[in-house]
Length: 331
Image (cartoon, rainbow, N blue to C red; front, side):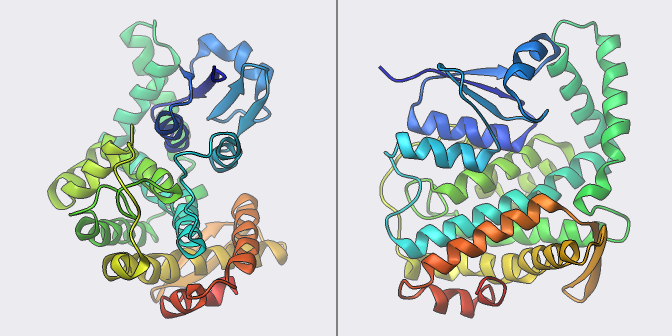
């Protein structure tokens, strides 16, 4: 009999949705506990940080942070694998997942808290989730408090009047790349979801739930929207494809978004921290992008670079990452 887990999460948290989708895909028994004020005592008993998702085993072992959670669960629930045996595709999948977690979160957070309709929608949904039994007037008041607090945090993801166009252009570019790629395949790498799918689809699913990016996706990226929703409960439908078959439509994601924006931003963030700077500016596509330095992002880049040291011995990977411009930031 499989062990039962509890997932403390939020429908508005891409990282919670990411972990829940993984548990569903692996058919791992679990209870989804929507984070609310009613579970504060139990949550605090296990959580090291006040963040979701929090996964608690039947033995009382607790895990936080979506990627380490999934990697740990993959050790005990290896099939169907979300990390391919082919090392080149495994690294590319990990790279896309890193991009999703650390850069595409900017898309989601920006749209959710920049535009007034999105602010109101998210604030009220979060408030209702936290106080499911409260009267509407209480929920509305709490929603306004949440809205005020979160709008002030836009700078944490680099969202500002100066960077607004860059973030929104990146979102639209991502949709333009993914839309033809997902036209004739259910998942990014073919007929089975990999680590990249869980990370990227969760961010885009959250965008789909917010008014402004929803309109953009509905009008310009129906294949992407369908994939993001499919990933709420993904199924094994077949095998992954070769890079040669994937490259015509997936390589632009590596070159235009990951090498063009994410990796230079991530490298600049790490360099700023090494210099002891609290804020940094990096030129992305010819325009300055300013943000507060983030320690977690620097650690995450270090993990990715260490993984590349082990993976680059495999034939073809260096060539792919050199051709797409990624190698300069990883080698």
